[in-house]
Image 1: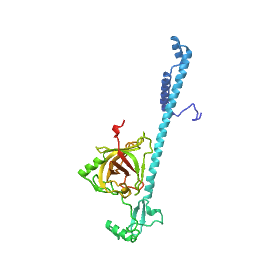
Image 2: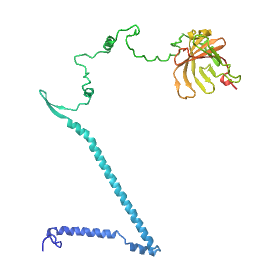
Image 3: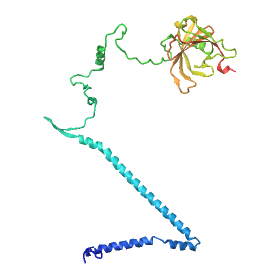
Image 4: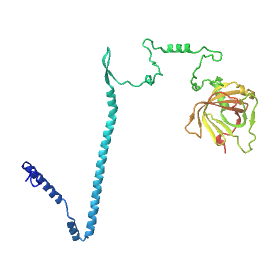
Length: 343
């Protein structure tokens, strides 16, 4: 009989085979002990009046739930494995640029200088191509000071001409900040007021002024009365200058502006309105201007020009600049009823 016969084993393996046989016998006994036959369950159920068909269906449902549970556990294990694999891939990808940088850090030999490390050099404007020249300043040329820069710039500019007395293009200067209270404004200008002159001007301007005609500012007589309106229709525009420093301007029932007002200066009649013959004109500063239909949007300082023509007031709204343009229309107004007195 040959040594390869399945009925024989090597004598040196006999001890290990016996030990493994004991382990397998114990596992089979444990597995059998952890099981209960369906017949035993049916006999136990029959003793309490439960039919065998119900036991069979319950056993099938239990097996299905156990199968689903095992499937979920398997899917969870697969998800964990995939997550770990993705993390490893990200780690490998993120480490590649560093490897490339290390690969570029090589040692080169230069005649007379020995070996040195050729570290990677970041790309700059000089790497764009031969069209761009090296603009690095020479170490022999000193860096010009600010004063030298200005002198050099002046020397490089063309000489001033009759049409351009400034000598070349000049960048626009920033707009001046709004005039402080009490300071004369550019444009209409005038003489700043103080003391009794301010009190007289405030008294003359304070009140509600209702539009009766539109007045032009083109240097020639131009008045357009609002008499075309019906007798029961109120004038469209009303200025309310309150004694506490607040103002409101209403145009019909759809537009209203509010803010604060103050007399800045007394001015001579601008050229466009000299034909009116008003005896006194004042420049008013309008601050904290807000259109009531746009809550939260506060405008910077604006301006108005008010003239006293007897018992009437002529009011020009100038806008953000204290200049009276020829296209501006003013409101010739008479004293009206304050808003709180209307019925």
